[in-house]
Image (cartoon, rainbow, N blue to C red):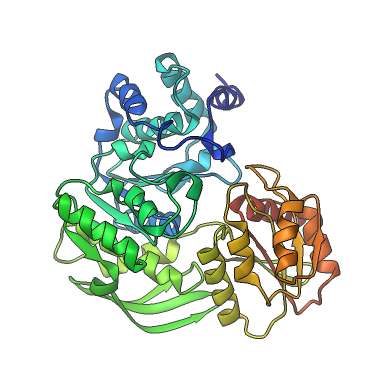
Length: 432
């Protein structure tokens, strides 16, 4: 089987990443993937797991944790979703994506054991677990796909779990309130397994605390256990000292931009501490791991036609406000021209409200992949908040429009969806 054939076979299964109108939780169950994994000799139980759920920051937290473990000389697996350019990005060993040949080989092994009732994400998750077992990883960092309680990754027996900030997203599936969504995220908490909790809205924290108590899971709030000091940040990243319950880490360089990444990095460090269960961890390795972390399209700075371009996949109101806050802090007073495209099913009106009164212009567009919202639907929301709006049918065209309507000293921000940011990055790479 070739890589293209393997992808085509995988694409023949129901892929909820491409749809928003489906029944949750009725169409979700852990039974299907558990049955498949049993036929594969339960590869998900062959190594310890660090399991991460949340609305915002879970991918960055996973990347920090995996990078720290690798710097500590452990062989690591990393499973994240979605991918930006290649499926192989989802499954990594020691930071390197699975090869196309290995992916095709994994599909060949799994294909005879699958039935048509499985979903795309269930099969991709099983493929990742199988690859990690084959590669004999020392630890795997696993990012939840959707929610947590019924997510296909929630079959693992984790050594430690983490929940990053919970906010409104995937509301049609997970619930209309923070509390309802927190119930789904807290579904990854296991009996007696420590759970690291990033800063949360009060209602989310109440749900997480109650679930942890019910399952006798030791709760480790980042807000009270991890303390940053001597914080200095600029466009190269943030440098700060971190105090944990077991030791102090000085001069940590966080290359992912924005103060919110401090919370993600602290969550990752505390996860690793609890996973290793040591009195001391090599601070140089922790420093190296954090400094080496890379995560595309999360406040990523690029240059295009003499302008600074910020690529960020912010796709809900809270993420948009964080993006705005970070931009204003790092580039005070600079005019901003926003390129935005969203996925169907997102809280577009709320996201638009976050941008009210700030961009000098807005170019609406749509991604080439995913499930892009029609531009005319976006237009209504941004016109209602008084933005000067134009439209472009593709992301490359939107970049050209933004350049034509801006000055060299202005900023261009590309956001609203990881797929839009990825299209922009792909276009910028071809121009280099």
